[in-house]
Image 1 (tube, rainbow, N blue to C red):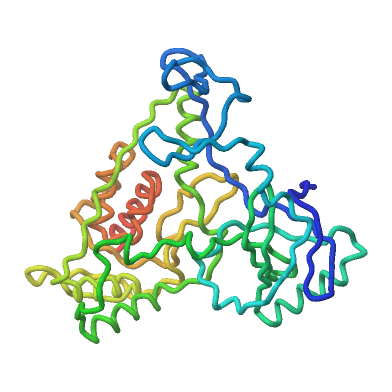
Image 2: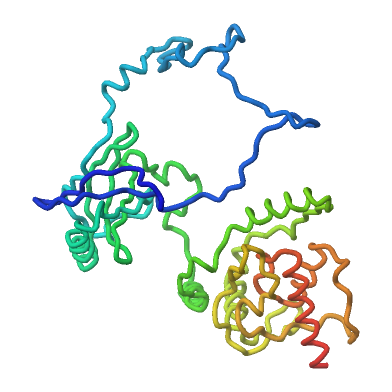
Length: 365
């Protein structure tokens, strides 16, 4: 079992329950050591005097707050310890707030809060149930590891969670941070708004965190495995994404909606018709998580339900060997075939999707 990072008591009113705090999330980031190129020698960071270049012992280091050019207010570690909030033994709930009133930007890190002993299960379960039924969170100030936190205690799936939160002065004003935010004077038609809303509704999905994964981490681990095995690794990017032309906004929205629905659309330059199937899509295309953490090699149609018919490219009925094509070349084929969600696919997924679309075209012809 995981050891708690903190133990103490949770109080609200005259009710007190001993609790333990546990880390709720893990980071699976691949961590590297720094080496000197051409060797296996580790590179270490040292504390060095900027003026003399000599290494400084840890006990000789103090903190300095710069108040001018080269002028500092020096603070000793002992002075900071004297005013540190220390380690709080109590999470004292001062009030309960409706969860809908807390903007997500204020939440920082999540911890699990469990009872410290089976004998406290009844009080713990009572508070958990009451918070769940009221849809409220308890607000409390809390000190840990020399820092004071604003926290929210809420009920989720039969247990209590403690969220550390940002203070109001830590949240930046987006109007000051972002130069080109719309000012409310932009004009768009009611038809454009309705079409955008229809597109959102069509792509609506149920939240399932298991269907999402960190593909970059998988690529890093695959790169390490390939280099360890002596395999050559070639990485390539697909064509860059272009910004939507405001003049063609309605046309782009309609074509996006048609693609999402899998319906038929006949909007092309010069009157060219682009045929698509009529089978509805069960879910927006998301790559499902596969066993062992490996990338799925299923096609976009396998991930998103029934695939629409694709535009015919070329007249040859013979199966083509796609294994020699690069990722950009496969991406171009996928674009010509109108394969949805191609920008999220790796090279193997693009090949599988193009091959499946090609088999469908040869069968139809």
